[in-house]
Image (cartoon, rainbow, N blue to C red; front, side, top):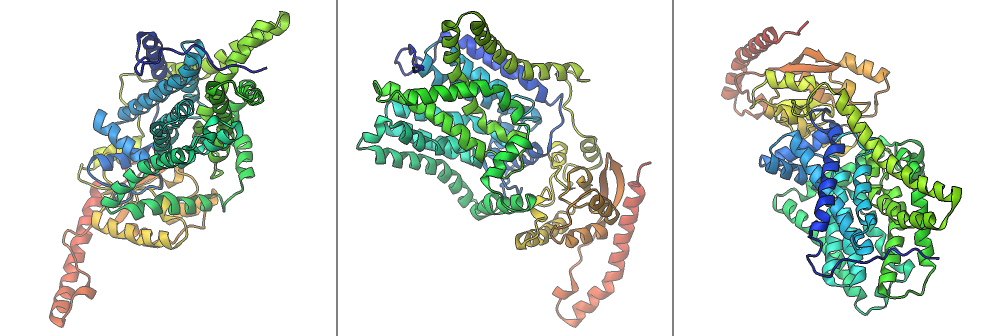
Length: 593
């Protein structure tokens, strides 16, 4: 027996999708997104590390700077461009990021509806997909903040599926190009979100879709590849014209791979990453409760595959889509945690496939309910109630509880760390502030520029030649940028970046901090020479720095005995001037009791 995904499709007009019949459900979807996203609204939560890194880089771009050159990070550039665009449209603040992510999620949901509407017409299953997508994306076991890369990548992931399905229905160059372009865009946001694109060809081969028998199949494959290269090429052209293509490649691939290998103590095999997914992450808290529906969806795909030969292109296309979704689920399961670190937000990548598998199970449930009697009928009916309670209950309940327990109002100020206020109040807008650790949130929210492109410490700590070069470059930046304040957040930032203070380093090592880091002595020496501790806020140490008020040239660069003698004579008063400035700073910014 096969389960048909087909249903009465709406009219064939190109703009038939834009009609009043979906305005009300779309409005409800938007309101639902706003509701379940309140749990991550700025008035309720503090900005976290990854979001702060992306936001600071986006702000640098918005202000005319360049990624990788003025703000270094080891991600592809898509997330930085999205942040910069959000700041351009809505202002440079956390609410801009909140709006940008919710708009992206809404567009991803509507793309899901566009895809499912081709299958189910105006039936409820077409709107069930967007609802499931939204509720899973806001599941508290998967996300704890906004502005991660994975939620932004949901839109191009869904566009790959939608364009691919349209291509299977009516093969043509434009849909192949669109599918490739969307896949390239997903890669530029998060490399591990390309599973949906990788699964397409295997799905076509396994299902034996009629497109395989056409003479233009190689042409369409080439156009699809061209689409992917086009999105990648446009960004590569931007990077090349700005002279940072090599920096971007080294940061996004070479440095990123080296760092992840160092963090994980070496590369790991695929089986171990899957094992980590199921034993050392929060993903099972989402996947396991949905297993009955995922299995039903996979079973529907298998039964559909067994009905060959097909009765028409539409039946073949529906079967190929089912197989494509199943393969995508397993490919995403492997790719999502390829670094074997198991962070919960990695598994947002699985949501499009999980959503479609769950949606595919709904017609099966309806058929089972219609055919069963007595207890079996009630059991199948309760399974549908269970799905609704599971999807609505967890994210909605989490949002309601967090909002009710919040001590601030929705219209109140955004929550932020005390150290952000401290830095903003004790520095001027033109001052630079070095964050030693991974808490770039301080630079973004206090609106203070970092004196170096290495605005967090990760690129400096991996013991290799690249890090040694970065360390020397960072010291040169510090000498030029002269930070007014250094914020040392290493005691609360994990076990990777050692503290600046030697005594605290010993304490940090005793708590499990890593000793196998690069030689950071040049940075430690700079801090010892120019900065001193003035405060501590929740284990975050604040340093105040001072510098000579007259520029001194190194004697080694001065030629000729008369000039050398002149500079040697000038050295003592310059040093005395520096000591006087430092003493004034120490008196003004003495440690607070």
